[in-house]
Length: 197
Image (cartoon, rainbow, N blue to C red):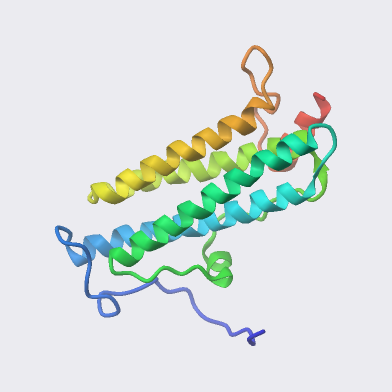
């Protein structure tokens, strides 16, 4: 293990560090788009780890169905990270996939559940997906000057929304209402879902 050093937060790159971008975009625009993607890379790396954590720690009725449902979501999210990191490189900005950079840059807390029943994990993951999808939608707007990147984010958002639909199907009654309605935290959502079982 390398010795921990203290650094201040700086942008991923500067024009001097990466003087190129794709044809049709200014260097400034290309790098601004890549900077927006860096936070998506962090969020999706965090989501993949969170999904894997839930995959390992889910217990109780419906265990195997939820355990196996999460694997393709994990793989899909990891693929999304790779696509965004490669897009950043294409735009002339080196992506940062290091855990320390993720922790330093993130604006969200760690996932709140450890070993818990399927309903609890699914309820908490629904809230996690809310945050990731909302931020992906905001990034779509932020990268509007680059329709190629915008298209990538739109496709990923559709996939993330489908993954959330799979999660929510376990949390809905026949009326369509979520058993976790109005929950403000992962723990609160987990408690509501577990009480409904």
